[in-house]
View 1 (cartoon, each protein chain N blue to C red):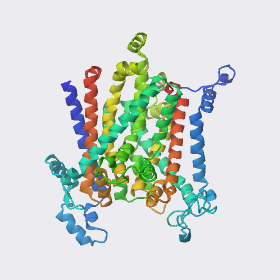
View 2 (tube, chains in turn brown, red):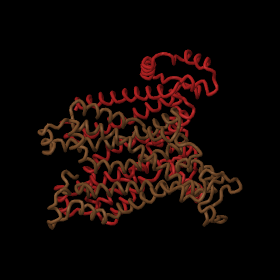
View 3 (cartoon, one colour):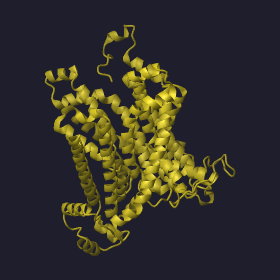
View 4 (cartoon, one colour):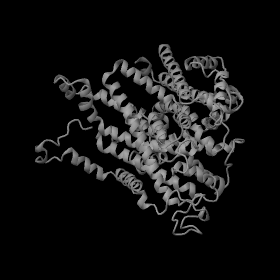
Length: 302
Length: 305
Protein backbone atom coordinates (compact mmCIF):
# COMPACT_ATOMS: atom_id res chain seq x y z
CA UNK A 1 0.00 0.00 0.00
CA UNK A 2 1.40 3.37 -0.91
CA UNK A 3 -0.08 5.82 1.52
CA UNK A 4 2.29 8.61 0.59
CA UNK A 5 4.77 8.21 -2.20
CA UNK A 6 8.01 10.12 -1.95
CA UNK A 7 8.35 10.57 -5.69
CA UNK A 8 7.62 14.28 -5.50
CA UNK A 9 10.36 14.89 -2.96
CA UNK A 10 13.63 15.93 -4.62
CA UNK A 11 15.57 14.84 -1.53
CA UNK A 12 14.70 11.23 -2.12
CA UNK A 13 17.38 10.73 -4.75
CA UNK A 14 20.12 12.27 -2.61
CA UNK A 15 19.68 9.96 0.36
CA UNK A 16 21.29 6.52 0.35
CA UNK A 17 18.03 4.56 0.81
CA UNK A 18 16.45 3.60 -2.51
CA UNK A 19 13.02 5.04 -3.32
CA UNK A 20 9.93 2.86 -2.78
CA UNK A 21 9.51 2.70 -6.53
CA UNK A 22 13.02 1.39 -7.05
CA UNK A 23 12.50 -1.16 -4.29
CA UNK A 24 9.30 -2.28 -5.94
CA UNK A 25 11.03 -2.63 -9.30
CA UNK A 26 13.78 -4.71 -7.70
CA UNK A 27 11.20 -6.98 -6.05
CA UNK A 28 9.42 -7.31 -9.40
CA UNK A 29 12.58 -8.37 -11.24
CA UNK A 30 13.42 -10.94 -8.57
CA UNK A 31 9.92 -12.45 -8.61
CA UNK A 32 9.98 -15.42 -11.00
CA UNK A 33 6.23 -15.97 -10.98
CA UNK A 34 5.59 -12.32 -11.77
CA UNK A 35 8.02 -12.34 -14.70
CA UNK A 36 6.41 -15.52 -16.04
CA UNK A 37 2.97 -13.96 -15.70
CA UNK A 38 4.04 -10.76 -17.47
CA UNK A 39 5.59 -12.72 -20.32
CA UNK A 40 2.62 -15.08 -20.80
CA UNK A 41 -0.08 -12.41 -20.59
CA UNK A 42 2.01 -9.93 -22.58
CA UNK A 43 2.63 -12.38 -25.41
CA UNK A 44 -1.03 -13.39 -25.55
CA UNK A 45 -2.16 -9.75 -25.61
CA UNK A 46 0.24 -9.13 -28.49
CA UNK A 47 -1.07 -12.21 -30.29
CA UNK A 48 -4.62 -10.92 -29.84
CA UNK A 49 -3.74 -7.42 -31.06
CA UNK A 50 -1.70 -8.60 -34.03
CA UNK A 51 -4.06 -11.45 -34.93
CA UNK A 52 -4.64 -10.31 -38.54
CA UNK A 53 -0.86 -10.18 -39.12
CA UNK A 54 -0.03 -13.43 -37.35
CA UNK A 55 -2.82 -15.70 -38.54
CA UNK A 56 -1.68 -17.62 -41.63
CA UNK A 57 -5.27 -18.13 -42.84
CA UNK A 58 -8.70 -16.59 -42.56
CA UNK A 59 -10.11 -18.11 -39.31
CA UNK A 60 -13.57 -18.34 -40.90
CA UNK A 61 -12.58 -19.72 -44.31
CA UNK A 62 -13.85 -23.27 -44.72
CA UNK A 63 -12.11 -25.73 -46.98
CA UNK A 64 -13.87 -29.07 -47.16
CA UNK A 65 -11.06 -30.95 -48.98
CA UNK A 66 -8.79 -30.04 -46.04
CA UNK A 67 -11.08 -31.24 -43.24
CA UNK A 68 -9.59 -32.59 -39.99
CA UNK A 69 -5.95 -32.36 -41.02
CA UNK A 70 -3.60 -33.30 -38.16
CA UNK A 71 -0.95 -30.91 -36.83
CA UNK A 72 2.35 -30.74 -38.70
CA UNK A 73 4.21 -33.13 -36.34
CA UNK A 74 1.62 -35.90 -36.71
CA UNK A 75 1.36 -38.31 -39.61
CA UNK A 76 -0.36 -36.64 -42.54
CA UNK A 77 0.25 -33.11 -41.26
CA UNK A 78 1.43 -30.40 -43.60
CA UNK A 79 3.23 -27.08 -43.27
CA UNK A 80 0.34 -25.08 -44.71
CA UNK A 81 -1.72 -25.88 -41.63
CA UNK A 82 0.73 -25.91 -38.69
CA UNK A 83 -1.83 -27.04 -36.14
CA UNK A 84 -4.14 -28.82 -38.56
CA UNK A 85 -7.75 -27.99 -39.40
CA UNK A 86 -11.16 -28.51 -37.80
CA UNK A 87 -14.26 -30.38 -38.98
CA UNK A 88 -15.00 -27.86 -41.74
CA UNK A 89 -11.41 -27.36 -42.79
CA UNK A 90 -10.69 -24.05 -41.02
CA UNK A 91 -7.05 -23.47 -40.06
CA UNK A 92 -6.80 -24.31 -36.35
CA UNK A 93 -3.81 -22.07 -35.62
CA UNK A 94 -5.63 -19.04 -37.06
CA UNK A 95 -8.70 -19.85 -35.02
CA UNK A 96 -6.63 -20.22 -31.85
CA UNK A 97 -4.98 -16.84 -32.55
CA UNK A 98 -8.32 -15.11 -33.02
CA UNK A 99 -9.63 -17.00 -29.97
CA UNK A 100 -7.14 -15.05 -27.84
CA UNK A 101 -8.98 -11.89 -28.92
CA UNK A 102 -12.33 -13.26 -27.80
CA UNK A 103 -11.03 -14.48 -24.44
CA UNK A 104 -9.14 -11.28 -23.65
CA UNK A 105 -11.96 -8.97 -24.78
CA UNK A 106 -14.46 -10.78 -22.61
CA UNK A 107 -12.01 -11.14 -19.71
CA UNK A 108 -11.12 -7.44 -19.67
CA UNK A 109 -14.68 -6.27 -20.30
CA UNK A 110 -16.25 -8.44 -17.62
CA UNK A 111 -13.54 -7.70 -15.05
CA UNK A 112 -13.98 -3.97 -15.75
CA UNK A 113 -17.72 -4.14 -15.10
CA UNK A 114 -17.22 -6.24 -11.99
CA UNK A 115 -14.59 -3.76 -10.80
CA UNK A 116 -16.88 -0.76 -11.22
CA UNK A 117 -19.70 -2.41 -9.28
CA UNK A 118 -17.55 -3.98 -6.58
CA UNK A 119 -15.27 -1.00 -5.94
CA UNK A 120 -18.18 1.47 -5.77
CA UNK A 121 -20.09 -0.71 -3.32
CA UNK A 122 -16.96 -1.54 -1.35
CA UNK A 123 -15.82 2.05 -0.87
CA UNK A 124 -19.32 3.21 0.13
CA UNK A 125 -19.80 0.30 2.55
CA UNK A 126 -16.36 0.76 4.07
CA UNK A 127 -16.49 4.54 4.35
CA UNK A 128 -20.07 5.18 5.41
CA UNK A 129 -20.57 2.07 7.56
CA UNK A 130 -23.92 1.79 9.34
CA UNK A 131 -26.94 0.88 7.26
CA UNK A 132 -25.04 1.31 3.98
CA UNK A 133 -22.56 -1.32 5.13
CA UNK A 134 -25.33 -3.61 6.35
CA UNK A 135 -27.25 -3.48 3.09
CA UNK A 136 -24.13 -3.99 0.99
CA UNK A 137 -23.13 -6.96 3.15
CA UNK A 138 -26.59 -8.43 2.69
CA UNK A 139 -26.30 -7.94 -1.06
CA UNK A 140 -22.94 -9.72 -0.92
CA UNK A 141 -24.40 -12.70 0.97
CA UNK A 142 -27.25 -12.94 -1.53
CA UNK A 143 -24.92 -12.74 -4.53
CA UNK A 144 -22.66 -15.44 -3.09
CA UNK A 145 -25.65 -17.72 -2.61
CA UNK A 146 -26.67 -17.50 -6.27
CA UNK A 147 -25.37 -20.32 -8.48
CA UNK A 148 -23.45 -17.92 -10.73
CA UNK A 149 -22.78 -20.19 -13.70
CA UNK A 150 -26.35 -21.43 -13.87
CA UNK A 151 -27.82 -17.94 -13.63
CA UNK A 152 -25.38 -16.67 -16.26
CA UNK A 153 -26.31 -19.54 -18.57
CA UNK A 154 -30.01 -18.84 -18.19
CA UNK A 155 -29.68 -15.08 -18.66
CA UNK A 156 -27.32 -15.28 -21.64
CA UNK A 157 -29.58 -17.81 -23.33
CA UNK A 158 -32.74 -15.81 -22.68
CA UNK A 159 -31.36 -12.41 -23.65
CA UNK A 160 -29.65 -13.86 -26.69
CA UNK A 161 -25.99 -14.87 -26.80
CA UNK A 162 -23.58 -12.26 -28.15
CA UNK A 163 -20.15 -11.09 -27.07
CA UNK A 164 -21.61 -8.02 -25.34
CA UNK A 165 -24.29 -9.93 -23.49
CA UNK A 166 -21.69 -12.45 -22.27
CA UNK A 167 -19.41 -9.62 -21.09
CA UNK A 168 -22.27 -7.86 -19.32
CA UNK A 169 -23.67 -10.92 -17.56
CA UNK A 170 -20.29 -12.26 -16.42
CA UNK A 171 -19.30 -8.79 -15.22
CA UNK A 172 -22.52 -8.23 -13.29
CA UNK A 173 -22.07 -11.57 -11.53
CA UNK A 174 -18.38 -11.16 -10.60
CA UNK A 175 -18.00 -8.19 -8.26
CA UNK A 176 -17.87 -9.81 -4.82
CA UNK A 177 -14.09 -10.17 -4.62
CA UNK A 178 -13.62 -6.46 -5.43
CA UNK A 179 -16.21 -5.53 -2.83
CA UNK A 180 -14.75 -7.60 0.02
CA UNK A 181 -11.22 -6.24 -0.43
CA UNK A 182 -12.04 -2.55 -1.04
CA UNK A 183 -14.51 -2.54 1.85
CA UNK A 184 -12.00 -3.69 4.47
CA UNK A 185 -9.21 -1.56 3.01
CA UNK A 186 -11.45 1.53 3.10
CA UNK A 187 -12.35 0.80 6.71
CA UNK A 188 -8.66 0.85 7.58
CA UNK A 189 -7.93 3.96 5.51
CA UNK A 190 -10.75 6.18 6.75
CA UNK A 191 -9.24 6.54 10.23
CA UNK A 192 -5.87 7.65 8.82
CA UNK A 193 -4.59 11.17 9.50
CA UNK A 194 -4.56 12.27 5.86
CA UNK A 195 -8.29 11.60 5.61
CA UNK A 196 -8.89 13.64 8.76
CA UNK A 197 -6.69 16.38 7.28
CA UNK A 198 -8.68 16.44 4.07
CA UNK A 199 -11.86 16.62 6.09
CA UNK A 200 -10.47 19.50 8.16
CA UNK A 201 -9.62 21.36 4.96
CA UNK A 202 -13.26 21.17 3.98
CA UNK A 203 -13.21 18.37 1.44
CA UNK A 204 -16.62 16.95 0.63
CA UNK A 205 -17.34 13.24 1.09
CA UNK A 206 -17.16 12.71 -2.67
CA UNK A 207 -13.77 14.44 -2.85
CA UNK A 208 -12.42 12.34 0.01
CA UNK A 209 -13.57 9.10 -1.59
CA UNK A 210 -12.20 10.09 -4.97
CA UNK A 211 -8.92 11.78 -4.12
CA UNK A 212 -7.95 10.28 -0.75
CA UNK A 213 -9.39 6.78 -0.55
CA UNK A 214 -9.53 5.51 -4.15
CA UNK A 215 -5.89 6.25 -5.13
CA UNK A 216 -4.71 4.31 -2.09
CA UNK A 217 -6.73 1.30 -3.12
CA UNK A 218 -5.36 1.19 -6.67
CA UNK A 219 -2.70 -1.48 -6.16
CA UNK A 220 -5.14 -3.84 -4.46
CA UNK A 221 -7.76 -3.21 -7.13
CA UNK A 222 -5.25 -4.03 -9.88
CA UNK A 223 -4.33 -7.29 -8.14
CA UNK A 224 -7.97 -8.40 -7.94
CA UNK A 225 -8.57 -7.24 -11.50
CA UNK A 226 -5.86 -9.64 -12.67
CA UNK A 227 -7.42 -12.56 -10.81
CA UNK A 228 -10.90 -11.67 -12.05
CA UNK A 229 -9.52 -11.53 -15.58
CA UNK A 230 -8.68 -15.22 -15.28
CA UNK A 231 -11.97 -16.07 -13.57
CA UNK A 232 -14.02 -14.27 -16.24
CA UNK A 233 -12.10 -15.99 -19.04
CA UNK A 234 -12.84 -19.37 -17.47
CA UNK A 235 -16.50 -18.39 -17.02
CA UNK A 236 -16.81 -17.43 -20.69
CA UNK A 237 -15.17 -20.68 -21.78
CA UNK A 238 -17.60 -22.68 -19.64
CA UNK A 239 -20.61 -20.83 -21.06
CA UNK A 240 -19.40 -21.25 -24.62
CA UNK A 241 -18.55 -24.91 -24.01
CA UNK A 242 -22.11 -25.55 -22.82
CA UNK A 243 -23.53 -23.80 -25.88
CA UNK A 244 -24.93 -20.79 -24.04
CA UNK A 245 -22.09 -18.35 -24.62
CA UNK A 246 -20.23 -17.29 -27.75
CA UNK A 247 -21.93 -18.78 -30.80
CA UNK A 248 -20.39 -20.27 -33.96
CA UNK A 249 -18.60 -19.36 -36.13
CA UNK A 250 -16.78 -17.01 -33.69
CA UNK A 251 -13.54 -18.66 -32.58
CA UNK A 252 -13.89 -18.94 -28.79
CA UNK A 253 -11.61 -21.47 -27.10
CA UNK A 254 -14.45 -22.90 -25.00
CA UNK A 255 -16.64 -23.27 -28.06
CA UNK A 256 -13.79 -24.85 -30.02
CA UNK A 257 -13.46 -27.48 -27.27
CA UNK A 258 -17.19 -28.19 -27.54
CA UNK A 259 -16.94 -28.48 -31.33
CA UNK A 260 -13.85 -30.67 -31.10
CA UNK A 261 -15.51 -32.93 -28.51
CA UNK A 262 -17.32 -34.86 -31.26
CA UNK A 263 -13.96 -35.94 -32.64
CA UNK A 264 -12.37 -36.45 -29.21
CA UNK A 265 -11.35 -40.07 -29.76
CA UNK A 266 -9.63 -39.78 -33.10
CA UNK A 267 -8.66 -36.07 -33.30
CA UNK A 268 -7.86 -35.26 -29.65
CA UNK A 269 -5.75 -32.16 -30.47
CA UNK A 270 -8.94 -30.34 -31.45
CA UNK A 271 -9.75 -30.42 -27.73
CA UNK A 272 -6.22 -30.37 -26.33
CA UNK A 273 -4.98 -27.23 -28.15
CA UNK A 274 -7.69 -24.72 -27.11
CA UNK A 275 -7.60 -26.15 -23.57
CA UNK A 276 -3.85 -25.56 -23.35
CA UNK A 277 -4.36 -22.01 -24.67
CA UNK A 278 -6.97 -21.35 -21.98
CA UNK A 279 -4.77 -22.86 -19.31
CA UNK A 280 -1.80 -20.70 -20.35
CA UNK A 281 -3.79 -17.46 -20.38
CA UNK A 282 -5.46 -18.12 -17.03
CA UNK A 283 -2.31 -19.30 -15.29
CA UNK A 284 -0.53 -16.25 -16.71
CA UNK A 285 -3.17 -13.95 -15.24
CA UNK A 286 -3.01 -15.76 -11.88
CA UNK A 287 0.78 -15.61 -11.72
CA UNK A 288 0.61 -11.93 -12.60
CA UNK A 289 -1.91 -11.37 -9.80
CA UNK A 290 0.09 -13.34 -7.24
CA UNK A 291 3.23 -11.47 -8.28
CA UNK A 292 1.60 -8.04 -8.12
CA UNK A 293 0.27 -8.79 -4.65
CA UNK A 294 3.69 -9.82 -3.39
CA UNK A 295 5.37 -6.81 -4.97
CA UNK A 296 2.93 -4.07 -3.97
CA UNK A 297 2.11 -5.16 -0.46
CA UNK A 298 5.11 -6.33 1.50
CA UNK A 299 2.84 -7.38 4.38
CA UNK A 300 0.99 -9.73 2.07
CA UNK A 301 4.04 -11.88 1.44
CA UNK A 302 4.65 -15.10 3.28
CA UNK B 1 -26.07 -19.81 21.53
CA UNK B 2 -29.82 -19.88 20.89
CA UNK B 3 -29.76 -16.19 20.03
CA UNK B 4 -26.91 -16.81 17.61
CA UNK B 5 -28.76 -19.67 15.94
CA UNK B 6 -31.90 -17.55 15.55
CA UNK B 7 -29.93 -14.62 14.13
CA UNK B 8 -28.14 -16.77 11.59
CA UNK B 9 -31.31 -18.63 10.71
CA UNK B 10 -33.23 -15.41 10.09
CA UNK B 11 -30.44 -14.10 7.87
CA UNK B 12 -30.39 -17.34 5.89
CA UNK B 13 -34.15 -17.16 5.41
CA UNK B 14 -33.96 -13.53 4.27
CA UNK B 15 -31.18 -14.34 1.80
CA UNK B 16 -33.14 -17.27 0.39
CA UNK B 17 -36.21 -15.10 -0.09
CA UNK B 18 -34.31 -12.22 -1.72
CA UNK B 19 -32.47 -14.62 -4.02
CA UNK B 20 -35.68 -16.34 -5.08
CA UNK B 21 -37.34 -12.97 -5.73
CA UNK B 22 -34.40 -11.64 -7.72
CA UNK B 23 -34.21 -14.80 -9.85
CA UNK B 24 -37.95 -14.73 -10.48
CA UNK B 25 -37.81 -11.10 -11.59
CA UNK B 26 -34.72 -11.61 -13.78
CA UNK B 27 -36.09 -14.68 -15.51
CA UNK B 28 -39.58 -13.28 -15.97
CA UNK B 29 -38.56 -9.81 -17.14
CA UNK B 30 -35.73 -10.93 -19.38
CA UNK B 31 -38.03 -13.26 -21.25
CA UNK B 32 -41.63 -13.56 -22.31
CA UNK B 33 -42.68 -16.98 -20.99
CA UNK B 34 -45.68 -17.04 -23.28
CA UNK B 35 -43.73 -16.67 -26.52
CA UNK B 36 -41.06 -19.07 -25.26
CA UNK B 37 -43.81 -21.60 -24.74
CA UNK B 38 -45.51 -20.91 -28.03
CA UNK B 39 -42.38 -21.51 -30.08
CA UNK B 40 -40.69 -19.40 -32.72
CA UNK B 41 -43.30 -19.39 -35.46
CA UNK B 42 -46.42 -18.86 -33.39
CA UNK B 43 -48.84 -16.11 -34.38
CA UNK B 44 -49.37 -13.20 -31.95
CA UNK B 45 -52.91 -14.47 -31.30
CA UNK B 46 -51.67 -17.85 -30.13
CA UNK B 47 -49.06 -16.21 -27.91
CA UNK B 48 -51.77 -14.01 -26.42
CA UNK B 49 -53.99 -17.01 -25.83
CA UNK B 50 -51.20 -18.89 -24.05
CA UNK B 51 -50.48 -15.80 -22.01
CA UNK B 52 -54.04 -15.76 -20.74
CA UNK B 53 -54.39 -19.52 -20.28
CA UNK B 54 -51.27 -19.76 -18.12
CA UNK B 55 -51.88 -16.47 -16.36
CA UNK B 56 -48.71 -14.73 -17.65
CA UNK B 57 -50.76 -11.55 -18.18
CA UNK B 58 -51.08 -10.98 -14.44
CA UNK B 59 -48.61 -8.79 -12.52
CA UNK B 60 -45.24 -10.42 -11.86
CA UNK B 61 -45.55 -9.77 -8.10
CA UNK B 62 -48.74 -11.77 -7.89
CA UNK B 63 -47.16 -14.59 -9.81
CA UNK B 64 -44.09 -14.54 -7.52
CA UNK B 65 -46.16 -14.90 -4.38
CA UNK B 66 -48.20 -17.66 -5.97
CA UNK B 67 -44.98 -19.44 -6.86
CA UNK B 68 -43.58 -18.94 -3.35
CA UNK B 69 -46.81 -20.21 -1.78
CA UNK B 70 -46.64 -23.24 -4.04
CA UNK B 71 -43.02 -23.93 -3.06
CA UNK B 72 -43.98 -23.73 0.63
CA UNK B 73 -46.68 -26.35 0.02
CA UNK B 74 -44.28 -28.56 -1.96
CA UNK B 75 -45.85 -27.63 -5.30
CA UNK B 76 -42.93 -26.56 -7.48
CA UNK B 77 -45.01 -25.76 -10.54
CA UNK B 78 -45.44 -27.43 -13.87
CA UNK B 79 -42.73 -27.96 -16.48
CA UNK B 80 -44.16 -27.35 -19.93
CA UNK B 81 -41.03 -28.66 -21.60
CA UNK B 82 -40.92 -32.01 -19.81
CA UNK B 83 -44.71 -32.25 -19.36
CA UNK B 84 -44.28 -33.11 -15.71
CA UNK B 85 -44.46 -31.34 -12.39
CA UNK B 86 -41.11 -29.83 -11.45
CA UNK B 87 -41.13 -31.50 -8.02
CA UNK B 88 -41.07 -35.04 -9.41
CA UNK B 89 -38.47 -34.04 -12.03
CA UNK B 90 -36.23 -32.76 -9.25
CA UNK B 91 -36.81 -35.78 -7.03
CA UNK B 92 -35.98 -38.10 -9.91
CA UNK B 93 -32.69 -36.39 -10.70
CA UNK B 94 -31.53 -35.34 -7.23
CA UNK B 95 -30.06 -38.64 -5.89
CA UNK B 96 -27.42 -38.80 -8.64
CA UNK B 97 -26.30 -35.22 -8.05
CA UNK B 98 -26.20 -35.66 -4.27
CA UNK B 99 -24.05 -38.77 -4.71
CA UNK B 100 -21.79 -36.88 -7.11
CA UNK B 101 -21.46 -33.85 -4.80
CA UNK B 102 -20.65 -35.97 -1.75
CA UNK B 103 -18.08 -38.08 -3.56
CA UNK B 104 -16.54 -34.91 -5.02
CA UNK B 105 -16.22 -33.56 -1.48
CA UNK B 106 -14.46 -36.77 -0.43
CA UNK B 107 -12.01 -36.30 -3.32
CA UNK B 108 -11.34 -32.74 -2.18
CA UNK B 109 -10.70 -33.85 1.41
CA UNK B 110 -8.48 -36.77 0.46
CA UNK B 111 -6.27 -34.66 -1.83
CA UNK B 112 -6.31 -31.19 -0.31
CA UNK B 113 -5.78 -31.85 3.40
CA UNK B 114 -2.73 -34.14 3.12
CA UNK B 115 -1.18 -31.82 0.52
CA UNK B 116 -1.78 -28.82 2.77
CA UNK B 117 -0.28 -30.67 5.73
CA UNK B 118 2.83 -31.74 3.81
CA UNK B 119 3.30 -28.17 2.62
CA UNK B 120 2.85 -26.74 6.11
CA UNK B 121 5.26 -29.14 7.75
CA UNK B 122 8.22 -27.38 6.14
CA UNK B 123 7.19 -23.99 4.78
CA UNK B 124 9.20 -22.90 1.74
CA UNK B 125 10.69 -26.35 1.25
CA UNK B 126 10.55 -28.02 -2.17
CA UNK B 127 7.44 -29.95 -1.09
CA UNK B 128 5.71 -26.72 -0.12
CA UNK B 129 6.66 -25.06 -3.39
CA UNK B 130 5.50 -28.07 -5.37
CA UNK B 131 2.15 -28.09 -3.55
CA UNK B 132 1.64 -24.36 -4.17
CA UNK B 133 2.61 -24.69 -7.84
CA UNK B 134 0.10 -27.51 -8.09
CA UNK B 135 -2.57 -25.28 -6.54
CA UNK B 136 -1.86 -22.38 -8.93
CA UNK B 137 -1.97 -24.71 -11.92
CA UNK B 138 -5.11 -26.53 -10.80
CA UNK B 139 -6.91 -23.21 -10.50
CA UNK B 140 -6.22 -22.41 -14.13
CA UNK B 141 -7.58 -25.64 -15.61
CA UNK B 142 -11.13 -25.37 -16.99
CA UNK B 143 -13.00 -28.23 -15.35
CA UNK B 144 -14.78 -29.33 -18.52
CA UNK B 145 -11.42 -29.65 -20.23
CA UNK B 146 -9.98 -31.64 -17.32
CA UNK B 147 -12.97 -33.97 -17.72
CA UNK B 148 -12.32 -34.45 -21.42
CA UNK B 149 -8.61 -35.07 -20.82
CA UNK B 150 -9.47 -37.74 -18.24
CA UNK B 151 -11.84 -39.32 -20.74
CA UNK B 152 -9.00 -39.53 -23.28
CA UNK B 153 -6.57 -40.86 -20.68
CA UNK B 154 -8.65 -43.29 -18.58
CA UNK B 155 -11.48 -44.00 -21.00
CA UNK B 156 -9.64 -44.41 -24.28
CA UNK B 157 -5.85 -44.73 -23.91
CA UNK B 158 -5.98 -46.88 -20.75
CA UNK B 159 -9.63 -47.90 -20.83
CA UNK B 160 -10.31 -48.68 -17.19
CA UNK B 161 -13.31 -46.42 -16.50
CA UNK B 162 -16.66 -45.87 -18.22
CA UNK B 163 -16.83 -42.45 -19.85
CA UNK B 164 -20.50 -41.56 -19.67
CA UNK B 165 -23.65 -42.39 -17.76
CA UNK B 166 -24.40 -43.05 -14.10
CA UNK B 167 -25.34 -46.70 -13.78
CA UNK B 168 -22.51 -47.94 -11.54
CA UNK B 169 -20.07 -46.55 -8.99
CA UNK B 170 -17.27 -46.66 -11.55
CA UNK B 171 -19.17 -44.07 -13.55
CA UNK B 172 -18.71 -41.61 -10.71
CA UNK B 173 -14.94 -41.89 -10.34
CA UNK B 174 -13.90 -39.41 -13.05
CA UNK B 175 -16.80 -36.95 -12.51
CA UNK B 176 -16.17 -36.89 -8.75
CA UNK B 177 -12.49 -36.26 -9.36
CA UNK B 178 -13.22 -33.40 -11.77
CA UNK B 179 -15.81 -31.78 -9.51
CA UNK B 180 -13.69 -32.35 -6.41
CA UNK B 181 -10.48 -31.04 -7.98
CA UNK B 182 -11.94 -27.55 -8.39
CA UNK B 183 -12.03 -27.08 -4.60
CA UNK B 184 -8.59 -28.55 -3.94
CA UNK B 185 -6.54 -25.32 -4.31
CA UNK B 186 -8.69 -23.32 -1.86
CA UNK B 187 -8.92 -26.05 0.77
CA UNK B 188 -5.24 -26.87 0.43
CA UNK B 189 -4.15 -23.27 0.94
CA UNK B 190 -6.43 -22.91 3.94
CA UNK B 191 -5.10 -26.11 5.54
CA UNK B 192 -1.57 -24.92 4.92
CA UNK B 193 -1.94 -21.41 6.35
CA UNK B 194 -4.02 -22.72 9.26
CA UNK B 195 -1.40 -25.30 10.14
CA UNK B 196 1.51 -22.89 9.77
CA UNK B 197 -0.20 -20.51 12.16
CA UNK B 198 -0.94 -23.25 14.69
CA UNK B 199 2.59 -24.65 14.44
CA UNK B 200 3.95 -21.34 15.68
CA UNK B 201 1.78 -21.33 18.81
CA UNK B 202 3.02 -21.90 22.35
CA UNK B 203 1.38 -25.25 22.94
CA UNK B 204 3.04 -26.69 19.86
CA UNK B 205 6.38 -25.48 21.13
CA UNK B 206 5.63 -27.30 24.38
CA UNK B 207 4.72 -30.45 22.48
CA UNK B 208 7.94 -30.15 20.48
CA UNK B 209 9.96 -29.81 23.65
CA UNK B 210 8.33 -33.03 24.86
CA UNK B 211 9.83 -34.73 21.84
CA UNK B 212 6.96 -34.82 19.35
CA UNK B 213 8.09 -34.48 15.77
CA UNK B 214 6.67 -34.62 12.26
CA UNK B 215 3.35 -36.30 11.64
CA UNK B 216 2.84 -37.38 15.26
CA UNK B 217 2.90 -33.70 16.20
CA UNK B 218 0.53 -32.85 13.37
CA UNK B 219 -1.95 -35.56 14.13
CA UNK B 220 -2.02 -35.35 17.90
CA UNK B 221 -1.76 -31.62 18.40
CA UNK B 222 -1.86 -29.27 15.44
CA UNK B 223 -4.48 -30.77 13.13
CA UNK B 224 -7.48 -30.33 15.41
CA UNK B 225 -7.14 -26.59 15.72
CA UNK B 226 -6.03 -25.98 12.16
CA UNK B 227 -8.96 -27.91 10.75
CA UNK B 228 -11.63 -25.74 12.40
CA UNK B 229 -11.79 -23.21 9.54
CA UNK B 230 -11.30 -25.98 6.99
CA UNK B 231 -14.43 -27.78 8.17
CA UNK B 232 -16.59 -24.72 7.60
CA UNK B 233 -15.05 -24.07 4.19
CA UNK B 234 -15.77 -27.67 3.23
CA UNK B 235 -19.43 -27.13 4.06
CA UNK B 236 -19.48 -24.07 1.80
CA UNK B 237 -17.64 -25.98 -0.94
CA UNK B 238 -20.23 -28.76 -0.74
CA UNK B 239 -22.88 -26.11 -1.35
CA UNK B 240 -21.02 -24.95 -4.45
CA UNK B 241 -20.69 -28.49 -5.80
CA UNK B 242 -24.34 -28.45 -6.80
CA UNK B 243 -23.90 -25.42 -9.03
CA UNK B 244 -20.69 -26.97 -10.34
CA UNK B 245 -22.55 -30.15 -11.27
CA UNK B 246 -23.86 -28.40 -14.40
CA UNK B 247 -20.52 -28.72 -16.19
CA UNK B 248 -19.44 -32.09 -14.83
CA UNK B 249 -22.78 -33.76 -15.53
CA UNK B 250 -22.89 -32.52 -19.09
CA UNK B 251 -19.32 -33.68 -19.82
CA UNK B 252 -19.97 -37.19 -18.45
CA UNK B 253 -23.64 -37.39 -19.52
CA UNK B 254 -24.90 -37.90 -15.97
CA UNK B 255 -28.64 -37.45 -15.63
CA UNK B 256 -28.65 -35.31 -12.51
CA UNK B 257 -29.85 -31.85 -11.57
CA UNK B 258 -27.02 -30.08 -13.36
CA UNK B 259 -27.80 -31.68 -16.69
CA UNK B 260 -31.49 -31.07 -16.06
CA UNK B 261 -30.64 -27.38 -15.60
CA UNK B 262 -28.77 -27.16 -18.91
CA UNK B 263 -31.48 -29.07 -20.80
CA UNK B 264 -34.19 -26.88 -19.28
CA UNK B 265 -32.34 -23.69 -20.22
CA UNK B 266 -31.90 -24.88 -23.80
CA UNK B 267 -35.61 -25.74 -23.83
CA UNK B 268 -36.61 -22.32 -22.42
CA UNK B 269 -38.27 -24.13 -19.52
CA UNK B 270 -38.44 -21.19 -17.11
CA UNK B 271 -40.31 -22.94 -14.23
CA UNK B 272 -37.69 -25.69 -13.98
CA UNK B 273 -34.74 -23.29 -14.34
CA UNK B 274 -36.25 -21.00 -11.71
CA UNK B 275 -36.73 -23.87 -9.28
CA UNK B 276 -33.25 -25.30 -9.81
CA UNK B 277 -31.57 -21.94 -9.24
CA UNK B 278 -33.62 -21.59 -6.07
CA UNK B 279 -32.74 -25.11 -4.88
CA UNK B 280 -29.02 -24.61 -5.53
CA UNK B 281 -29.10 -21.26 -3.73
CA UNK B 282 -31.01 -22.80 -0.83
CA UNK B 283 -28.49 -25.63 -0.52
CA UNK B 284 -25.68 -23.05 -0.51
CA UNK B 285 -27.45 -20.95 2.15
CA UNK B 286 -28.11 -24.01 4.33
CA UNK B 287 -24.49 -25.17 4.01
CA UNK B 288 -23.31 -21.71 5.02
CA UNK B 289 -25.65 -21.77 8.00
CA UNK B 290 -24.33 -25.19 8.94
CA UNK B 291 -20.76 -23.88 8.66
CA UNK B 292 -21.56 -20.87 10.88
CA UNK B 293 -23.24 -23.00 13.53
CA UNK B 294 -20.49 -25.59 13.40
CA UNK B 295 -17.91 -22.88 13.92
CA UNK B 296 -19.86 -21.36 16.78
CA UNK B 297 -20.25 -24.74 18.44
CA UNK B 298 -16.54 -25.50 18.12
CA UNK B 299 -15.26 -22.04 18.97
CA UNK B 300 -17.10 -20.22 21.80
CA UNK B 301 -15.47 -16.88 20.90
CA UNK B 302 -17.63 -16.59 17.79
CA UNK B 303 -21.02 -16.91 19.46
CA UNK B 304 -20.21 -14.40 22.16
CA UNK B 305 -19.11 -11.49 19.98
